[in-house]
Image (cartoon, rainbow, N blue to C red; front, side):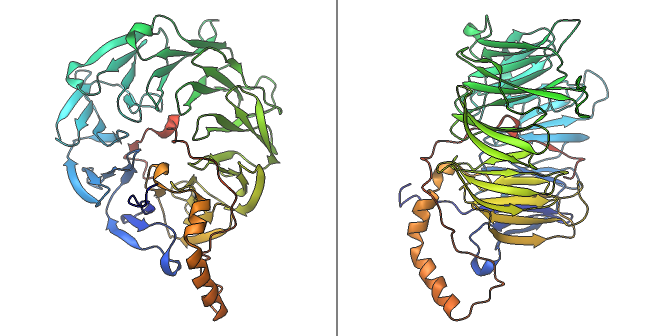
Length: 482
């Protein structure tokens, strides 16, 4: 990173019943965050994937778009009977879903945020995780498509007035996932039907190459599937879930993890070394390895390479969550939800545990864009008590804590990780700050103040651009307030 291109400041959005505010992120001066934007009344808020825009749904259901460089409102939409809204990855488009009266009502509208004009409209009867947002975009918005009955429809992202420009017929298709970085492939899931096995297939987005799937896997005992593309769009992980576990070992059903590649080299089951459910699976930012938490408690965690060979074992424990930092050099292995909140922080480059911590009752958790901090939040309506935010250093030491009477949302403002230097470089650049702090401690500084020193670090891996998670398409449901 050039000296003339300084790293952007970290920022945090916190939403309470009175509205959302924007904090200046760590490191904090005097141990407390500054306020970039005072509370703005809202029912729902969501950043675009690149962090350039913020979509805010006001209590009166007016949808406002903010430019995140200044947090000034640049566009507002008053849409009757709106039930849900989503913003595209680069903040170019707003998608809205309205209550409808007749099938003739085109209740899904795609709006150009810059002009405020509708650019595409369609009718959609219902809304679910697999059908909303209706139109999927790649991270650069160059590719776009939507799931329709027995087909996937593809658009010209630069001109939606053309309607869909071609379609891919897949009888019985129930879910589709467009690869994000780049948008070159689409994965399709067809459920089991009348003795015919369920399947996951991968097709190119190029119309001339869609005559046959480049990869396919069939399997039985599957009612739903979670699809996750890697950065580079050449590897797909599919978690197949059945409602019933025929072995009667789990009340929650049975799950299997499959791995497919666009070159057809892998189309099979990931060999996991412990029986039980797949709790979480995440690609690293490079797209070259993935981490899986699996098995009956105490669960096991393993990192695999792109050839599906195990690279490293993270041990066992009360875990169901795995999070890579955006630079791919640190991981947090945690147990949230109905588990006690234990966290283990790993240096993936040095292949060693560097710290442990605890964050009980956490509802959300994510690394900061620079990969240095890990934030957990306990939020309503999932939990009505002990709401608050905790921020940990990359080695698990607690950096900051703030409690709320009620908190609905806490998240980092997205930034491109390549805009930040690695931790080892940062330690060297702030050596003078450590000297100053040492002097202050010698004068009897209060031990109760939040710790602001940078902990001992290990040489991180070279940065590779981040992938966009399959579930990362930004969306907001007005009624959720969560």
